[in-house]
Image (cartoon, rainbow, N blue to C red; front, side, top):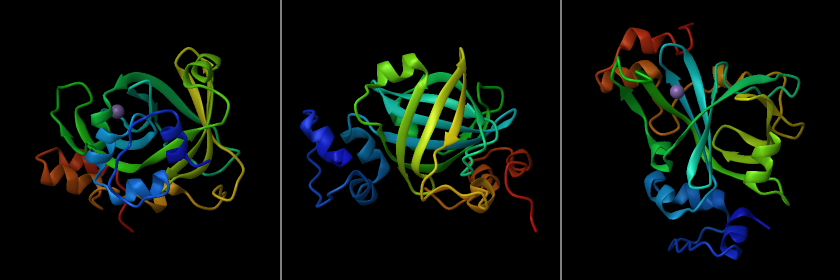
Length: 212
Ligand code: MN
């Protein structure tokens, strides 16, 4: 059963006025803000964030919030690579559409890019609270950049690992953060976002790929 059908069966009210048959189609037909408001769960977001250190904020909508991990090196499509993912504070679901600058001196001060977005499905037969408590989240991503099955596995306290599962979307060759450095919302690089929004352009540029 596709994700949308499952949510409908669970009683969530999704009256979209579109002819979307899958969550991905639905997502592609709606502005993100509207999509975020209408859905009870299932949003997936990565925000590339050049704060004091560059990191990728990996977020999954569950229990009414965006559960969040800070991934210093970002995701890897290589199934043998384990990326550290520090669990950080929950964020409001509405924050999932944010791209822009946070004033220097404030928490997280710097530039934020909407690096990827879409929906996710938790593996069948488990609930979020059970899976989080066990420290074993296995899910399928339907993003614009990341797809297929991924895992978040807890090592200790707030330390988790983000690991790609073996499937058609895994790759040892493609470095996805290098290959796809632009915003899915605006196509901008970090430096352009900082320039447009009055941020620190030089600092933001250190998070972009080096000019070739
Ligand atoms: Mn962050």
